Image: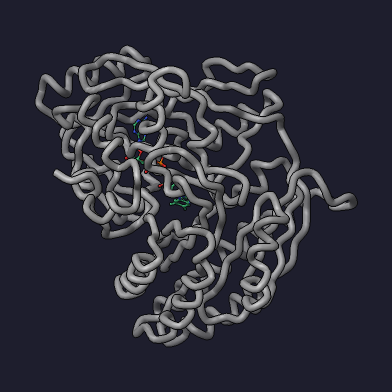
Length: 431
Ligand SMILES: Cc1cc2nc3c(=O)[nH]c(=O)nc-3n(C[C@H](O)[C@H](O)[C@H](O)COP(=O)(O)OP(=O)(O)OC[C@H]3O[C@@H](n4cnc5c(N)ncnc54)[C@H](O)[C@@H]3O)c2cc1C
């Protein structure tokens, strides 16, 4: 059966598929695949735009390897089976009175798929999901199981938290969670000029700050989510949540996108219309319900991490370049922030970071837009999101990551025969 990712940008025909339901079965599967001379890849939820999970060898589906193994509500340490989706994880943590401190935009991913590609949300003082990992257990190429944390095998831990499945199968993840908390969401349209002028202030003054900018519109949608402040802010009624996030952001926006795809000359006016109809909303809700919104309109995406101080220059270049493109752009640009971290292949390794993500509606031409974006990002020392579209190879990536060779050394130790290889890993790590 052919495997395909969410965006339809990657597909593969695995020689064998396995659905292990125990840690022993994961190890047996790796051994069995090795005996058959097959490479091994884990399939997450298929939400990477790159072919990170694609394999013609053995595909491990961990959808039967889910749930919480242990939870210590005092320390916040929670160990989960690696196939659990963020949606199930958030619900399970909520029942325990706990939460993930920071999350990305959606919750369809598996925890192991999300950390493996460096999935992140936004927050100038916060890191991505992998920074919330306290320990991991991995099944290595020889079928043995090892655990790692800051104290135990620290090099493996520094490498394995964002490792694209190159070091082994992550079987369990121990997360450092926080007590469940409420976020007060403030979302409002604002002139792009004002957002860029106040970018540093917004990043510093808010727990979670991001904005969306429609390339031909003058307005941006600014989202500021803060922990439990904002007296008088009411919860969102369910009908309003449905209206804003399902109807307006998915059904209505999907309709505009389809119209634009059928008549590309309308894309610029439709884009301006979408920017002009952005509305203000302010509400409070459990954190994970604020972080996550449904994304039903399919698109392709590229995202790069740049040193935070260069983000305004990058955006200015993009603003100059996009109107000159022959093919118009339907989707907004998303800008987020994160704190520097110490995970070797994290896109925020060693530097306070801003993320710029570009999207295009599925079926519309995107190659020139993404090419322009990559050239702007190259000049700014941008690092591509491992799960989103990019063309960089190992030579280019080595320059961007001070610990790139350290990662390759750990890979040589854990997977000398390249049991976990696939074409995408050959692109980014070399032959
Ligand atoms: C609509 C949409 C919204 C998104 N929003 C965000 C966002 O807000 N922030 C962000 O940073 N990214 C975002 N992404 C990207 C997404 O979070 C990442 O691509 C993530 O890796 C997808 O997780 P997955 O479970 O689908 O993993 P997959 O894409 O299936 O796999 C990713 C990689 O992880 C490996 N892997 C999975 N499980 C294991 C395991 N147990 N052991 C070893 N390796 C494993 C796979 O082999 C593969 O290499 C978004 C993507 C989409 C489609």
